[in-house]
Image (cartoon, rainbow, N blue to C red):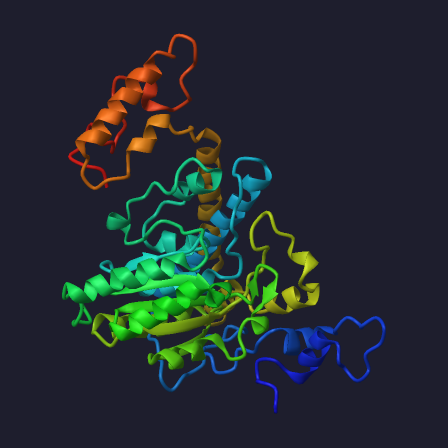
Length: 426
């Protein structure tokens, strides 16, 4: 039986230890073997801008884009990468408990995020800082999640961006249920005004039962949900080929809806394919699966050491496919942007990084009364009574304890958004 194309014979034999020339100590694979064997190929993926920065045509997807729009995509990716690098540095300096890098996945996220319409809803996992950016979530609002002071300070109803989900694949169930509600309430049928849901998850999540259940329910109920899998090649230390015998996008066939692979390091292709898929959902054509073939160029999180399980040659090979560099090269080659533009974006990224850092250094601890807010849509009398009782009890300690810095417990004003000073919590 021939080996599947995503797992070449050389790697299959090397991994199983049955290579004909195997010795007591297996030799490390060469850089060529790393590129050709250790990773699944991206053959068949939609591509509109190749790694050399050249526009290429595709028979099914074409994208007309102005110089201004292309420069805007470049700016998005540069700023998001700078936020990501600043978050990484802040964790190393003790300002954050942990950080989840997105380095290398900027095109997948910016392309998908900019394809969304205002009425669409996104369900992220924990790495979607680029999607948050596209949905208007200020980068400083992400910091509390990774310091452990809140679960997310933005309102999903305002941003169309749900809170981060740490439990692997859990958000797929949430997204499917939300999309089923969109169909039941008649919010689909028109490509301009219809609603769609997009769910982000990684290649590792496809091994979870929640993804399977979500696919089943979405297919049966024609839910307008786009399953957007960022295949960054590693589920922490587990490579993709050890999780699936077929390319991930082909799994959709078994559930009866379309799946497609896109070059996730190509922001133009990702934008075009995601626009098509979301329109399919908005017009009532059921779910779609996109596999964005990309690469995580940093560790899984700041608590991970990627050098323990992947080779340096592999990382260097993927750096040649950097999503930002290919857009920069294209802009320069086509005469669409000069040095002044690039200098301006770099300066803006410096200012953004400083703002993020300043916010992290001055970020207050939340008051303990926050346990009563952001829970119920409308406050109930028992919750109000419990909060008032807690405030009265806590006040008895004011003479002997300093209030927590930034806590509203030391003022007469109730906490903004709490059940005591609003018509109801969100």
